Length: 114
Length: 114
DNA sequence: CTATTGTACAACCATATGGTTGTACATGCA
DNA sequence: TGCATGTACAACCATATGGTTGTACAATAG
Image (cartoon, rainbow over all chains, first blue to last red; front, side, top):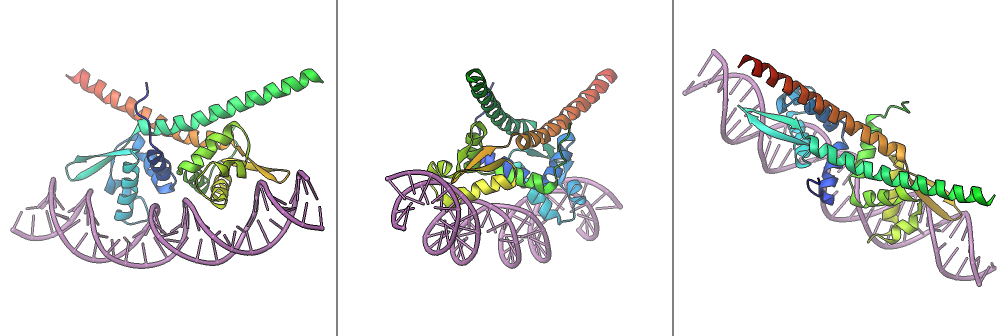
């Protein structure tokens, strides 16, 4: 069952968001448990505002979601989006596998003619 | 068998390269069969030089490799790199799965106390 | 109420990115 | 030889990105 087709812009945002080490580190942490923005910010050598921006990039890409808890904003990883990115890569692997079969067929033909 | 650990910069390049619709389209084409840069360039509404740059971004990320064939430069998809990107996403999914288990355990405890 | 904590957001700056045009050069064909 | 094709690369430009600081405001603690 297909959830929803991703637009080019959606995919741009997903991979763009993952193209930064700080944001990947955040992903690794919030996929396991929800963490507040300030908790996240505490561990990086940059301003709170910078971390806030990174989180908002991940949020725009639907890689994380935020929910209010008192005065804190809890950031949690969004598994479905990660899975869709994975599916895209898997489809390329599938193309590659088909090429491999095609090449094997050609070699097979050559084998017969020799 | 692990091939090689990817540095942050390597992963930055991989996901950065995938964060563009033209480059993803190129990937989809060259994973199936090797194509010359000019063949690729023919189908996009941009200059040859622009496509050349996109290919070189993919090449720096090790997502494609080029080989000379006469005066043409044949671009082919690089499956191992795609697979490594996929593995990274899979590891996050695994973290998420562990969180799900953890939550289920908590719910289980609560169930017993009620 | 007041102070502290956590967040939001604007303004600013340096650098990276994605496109262009122009030039140069190697290869293949007539 | 001469010409078309395919590639390489530099220079340039507009916009996006990743960081900063500063200000403002909501929620909690004393």
